[in-house]
Image (cartoon, rainbow, N blue to C red; front, side, top):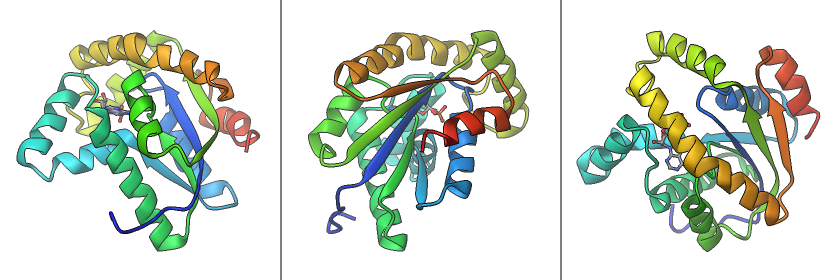
Length: 198
Ligand code: AMP
């Protein structure tokens, strides 16, 4: 992918606690919006990459199993490669980047190499923690994910509080518009609020 040069793209960052519905809404937006929006989930890209094995696979696996963040240069590279692949396949230049940025380090790594893309706004899904725990435990019965169990769920919430929430404030201070989305509602109610922003 290194030889592919991406034109300036439109990006929407989607953040929020684990289980807040980011992925579900991004899938719907990808299917239903006109204009060719591509959903790229940082978590999905990392989960796919760890199956490659080796040292990098082990590192990603350990971070995910502990509810901690994977080093940002790894995540940003995977996002960049995902964008390039979508551009090559369909000339896509509109991206829903789900689960990013989750830390200051994430945003710094983005700004190092991806600053030419414009972040048109950020969606921040907010939902009471007890609702999120219920959703994640239910998902854990069929997801097969190593981090959908109560012990790791608690760690993921802690990571979210400590690292992710502060970055939302910094993005706002840098001039990115943040839309807070109350996500303790039905999928279609949330979709109608979210889609009206595009
Ligand atoms: P998710 O699929 O969004 O619930 O993310 C699952 C796990 O992937 C997280 O708990 C982290 O270990 C890792 N991860 C996801 N997004 C990021 C990110 N932006 N930066 C670093 N690690 C991430």
